[in-house]
Length: 201
Image (cartoon, rainbow, N blue to C red):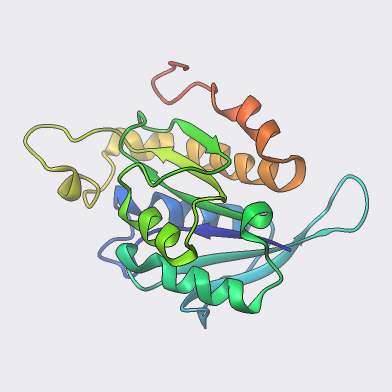
């Protein structure tokens, strides 16, 4: 079984903020595959479905949105891993926002540190390891005098919202690629894909 975890903050106050890109991406992925996300399981919103594989049986996939706020995301992940047949090193994918990437840019990685992202840092601390795949979604650096912590709690601009439809779809594509073809294939396909500004790299 594979487990896809989107990081974010619960409640309507945070729904449209940059920090909730992870939530929005896994919602798009879940909707595409008719995975219904419901509250009250593993400390978050959870759903389970199957992806058709090119060879062999369909792939069993769980989708989780921790509901303990960003800085305590690890609790829900650990709870899910205790009860589901998921090996973090090979079966876990964590999806989250990243201020170090331009808006809409995607980065797939097989593991590593938190890069200063508090939600990811909490997941790593809870698991005792950063040896799991992750998908980073660029939300850009603060504009003006805003601190990073305040910036990620602001909504996307109207122009960015127009571009989000395509970028969220691309991120959902990246999730599918990781699950069905592996991290290396997803890195080769998506890590140099143009961002919303048309630049690559």
